[in-house]
Image (cartoon, rainbow, N blue to C red):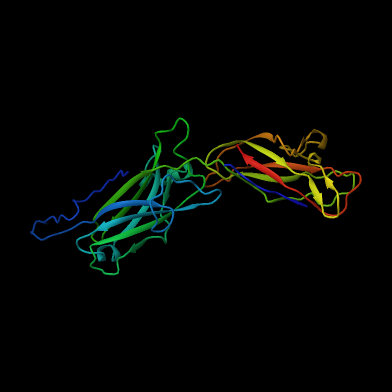
Length: 306
């Protein structure tokens, strides 16, 4: 058995539908009323962290994005904590906004809502506090479509956070940001050739899955490796390992692995989606030398996204 070594080379646009901060309108009876206002929207990669821009997705995993803002409400924090609500979402232009249309855009990697358990009010131990912070966490998938694609330079992402108080008064604020392209791959961790007699060749090709773990098309990769060094002496030259994108390719027609000047392989993997993980298999065989070996042998194979 030998093990893989895997590598991959991979300010404010606000919409506040409320009176100005600190202004108390009067109802028809002359009594003072108030609606919430939002300011200081921050997009961060950790809870109550500094503003982060642009956002770089995490390979093959969701990244937590925290949307934080300051809320002012003349009637106090209790108007939010007791019967009010806080929501947040990320969405990509020009593919549409969230709201009623969001479900149609989920498959297009364009709209994500806050985590159901993430909403919190901070620095609001006093129900009568009129100024306090709120924060929501949103999981941004690794395949979220970037806004820096060639030919789509006018596209952008926007973060929004909204507050509805106990009386139904609503306000929201938005801020634009970029999600950058990430070209990356993951592979199965091990290629196991099993037991092999001296001079023998692997009977069944050993599949290794290549996954597009970024948010852009993965059209080509390079593959290179090392000799297999055997525990009890001797080694198998790197070229004794061969690969093919077709499972039924005879050993003689497969591509030999090399240690330098790596082979460039066209793989054409689109980004993954919410429902489908983008992957393709590469099939491997090994031919052992006729003498000079004993025991288990190990080496590395490196895959690099181009």
